[in-house]
Image (tube, rainbow, N blue to C red; front, side):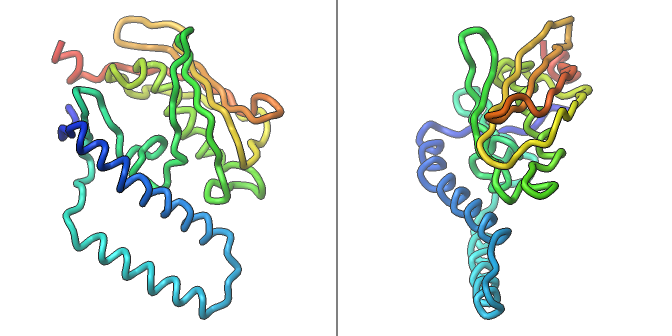
Length: 208
């Protein structure tokens, strides 16, 4: 079934960048502080009361519907995407770039909120990042609707928290399928590898 999209003008996009994205970044800082803090009980209670009040204030205004995508000049804008969404505090977020050779890359930092084993990134977060990166490559920068059919993750070693780099590329295409590969690395080299099959959904095929 086709997704529901709302159109944003360039002016509205600028407003999102100027207002909502900094709010999201502030919440990311709050999440990190919540994970790291060892404040005393009084400070924690005061913070909780303040945060609950801010939450009520934000929800008192019109909220975005879940399951709604956004487009600007026909381009998809994943405001709530769990990996790249500028309005989603759980997203790192990934900022994905396309190189001249057709490979996709992103440099980012994963902090304490993404921890699995002590000092290491949770394996599920590594999978999330690589699913997004392979999907970006398969759909050519999200310009074509291809969704994950299967994905295989190989964990070569633990991925340390901190600065990381992800890369992905299309290995080949066959009809409605694209086969993509990629990896996640730190300063010491590749930590996680992935390969996946991405499929054009039925509604996109019917539209053609």
